[in-house]
Length: 106
Image (cartoon, rainbow, N blue to C red; front, side):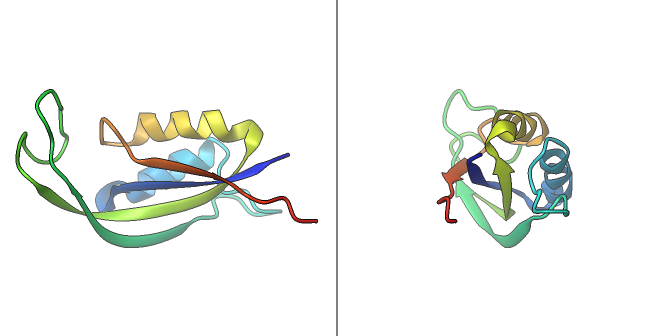
């Protein structure tokens, strides 16, 4: 079965809750381990445009937020569930979610 790496950016204060939601949906399983993840902190930048409903910041004003980049592996049969869990648990109305297929090496 194909394995994917899911990468998502979230405000630091919401990182633990998002990691838990992803793990409960099936991401982060490596062998006999569950909820495996890697996290790096950085600065996310954005500017909400007209029509946006930002959870942080104001329309038309540039914003900077301390965020975590969360990476977790995910089996292909769990991918839709994990992405759905991210969208439910994430505070942003438009979370940045990257999904990378991993090479299958024997």
